[in-house]
Length: 494
Image (cartoon, rainbow, N blue to C red; front, side):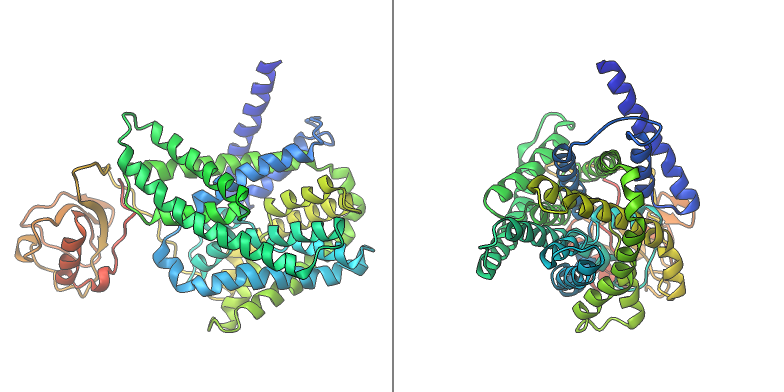
């Protein structure tokens, strides 16, 4: 029996990997394909697998979301996020609240819910999904002008705690009518405050541990970071904070530090995040019964359209009033309001709490998610071009060498792009008077790589792979005409 279970799991995972090629070729979001695959494997599909355990699905979804958020934070560039921090926080809090209220008000009379149940439905589907947004924006090579990409990724990674807070608060209100507004405010401050403090502290602590433990086997470092992620989530949740906010912040804080095996650890967590996305969406696809979606398809479509064209735009426009973004950028932010696994996971909470109409709410939410991923996810590149907000994608360059930071080596590998107007253009390296601790290891010129010597003449557009310490980097950037380390990237191969 165990062998057949392993074969079945392997076939589902392998099929998920293969159908991702359809996403690459035809622009269909991979997450939608994973959901559909799970539905086909379920009891209503040819797979015939019966799965009706919301508690287990919720547990799998929470574990997966923790790892996805940490990976997303780890891959987030703080230098890009910092300029949009205010806008991201407003979208993650006020934007989520306004979306929930507007959708809840509209949904209440449409499906004969009480106004509290309507607000609960709005709260469940109020946040954008980190897995969906990261997947679409990163895997499909979409390049956007200005601050849009970091803003969208920051919002999607940080707005889940607000949606979870609203959902749990409304469930408590429905099951315990004596809950007051003061109780809500205390819960909000505790969740966000503890989550932010522990997230920052654990991010610093994880980096310290990685660099100080000096483990004898490289394979133990992923185990260390994995254990630290779960510890961050569990400890924060036990203390009454938002574990999801904590793991996302811990990933951001850790990602900005220099630690040994950084590139290999980032690759590990990126692969783990994809595994969790596949597992989560397959599980949620198995959980739903497609035959139950047919009766609510009409009303589900209406609610999905209200979300996309009214509730989400209202939340975005109100949140971004003081931002200075153009109306085109605000429209695009509104459209990239992808819903994914998080609303479906949150929809299991009313089921377990036995809230009235919980089955109806779950099925409507699932239909809304399918509609959002299908309509919005597939059209994001087209909408970006229509609004004039796309730019040519700049893929990361792959280098024929790797660098692993070790104790005793203070330098780090950096990637510098030489502008055409640099004073170094047309000069040999030996003429530049660069600091002795600034070593040019490799030069990428077009599609070719050049092993440099003192007599190598630099050209505009050259990408220099350099091994250096921070003081020498600042001196060299000044000589190369790179103001404020402009063009420096810390994500060169390690």
